[in-house]
Image (cartoon, rainbow over all chains, first blue to last red):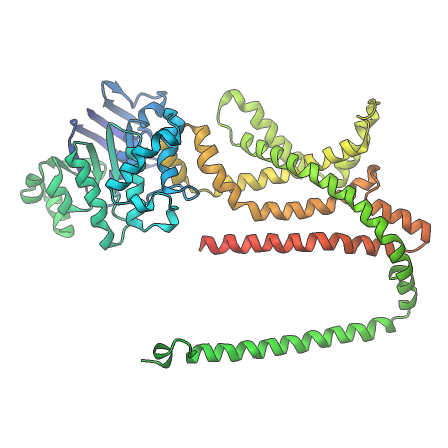
Length: 240
Length: 279
């Protein structure tokens, strides 16, 4: 479904991504782990075309979306991205946050969406918060609304950029539960994460990033229990 | 366990100390203010020219005769203000958006907006009023298109829209980039991102700054008197000549303050509210 080949990206003199290759099959959950600054976030923003890559190919559904000059808008509608800091629109209620993009991009009226959106809120335990504003919600609730907002576009693949890193520890579980539920229904997902327990439990594939390269990838068992690389071992001993 | 914990109605040591401090500063402020006022009341009338000033600026007879006429004339100020303000808002918004346009085909608009704000923020208001207010009717346009109301108002609109545009643009710049990232990541177009996500937040952020411009506009309407309209400042001048007395100007000042002080307070109130929200 998604295939990255030799992705290169620099910000000024800083070479952030140095040749990333990655295959993601439909229904797979891939976890990117690695220290801060290893390129995880940049990679996700590149796939969503927010920060276009300098070189390399991103094959998505038979199209190279890294092609310079390609209109990013229709691609982004099919590749959702959830941010570490939620980035909800503070001047809109939770429901309006969720309905804006389907309304403007797909032409679905509020009335046409409301039923389905209410179902989504109910499903993630936010039925009673649907008309609240972001500043009336806890971090965990805001992040769940942000996930619903991305889901409402019915994307083919969802990217999660350290979505629990800005949360108080006691709020992490409610967000991870949402991911678990999406995993169960077969959503294709790529996560940049520091939640090693979660990655070990649910990922099909874990990639360890170091200085803009995927140093090692494999099943959770391979990476967590028998890492080949010394650097991977070192990193895991620091975070586990 | 302190006393405050046992009984919430009982103020703690810190609260008692602060209350005493507050009482003391209010007392000091009250005494020093009274002393200053007393000094002014006693000293000013001792000035050698006081009797003359009193007669020509604070003449009750002239005041009561001219005040109703001044109020009448002020209605024209309000009318000019009322039709200028919405046009300023629209033009200012348009120019602000033009300045951030990225499309190459629309570059002329961007260039126009940049030159426009530079020019009209760089000129004294009164100069623009003279140039537009006398210059355009000088083309020999037929009635009603030679009216100083129209061209004087246009001058105000042109100048104030340039300031409003800059204020709005700073508001757009104040919205964190993560907001447009979030909007774009959902597949929204650049235009929709601006219209639904950036602008509503930006306009709310700059409301207090724009309120200050509204107050300034209300005052600057008086400048139109130089190109013709008999609004309050001009009317005060007519009365001054009629009665050979400056009291009508004091009357006009009182009327202006009655409007602008509440507006300024309101702007400050919005500004404080904004600051609190940001914390």
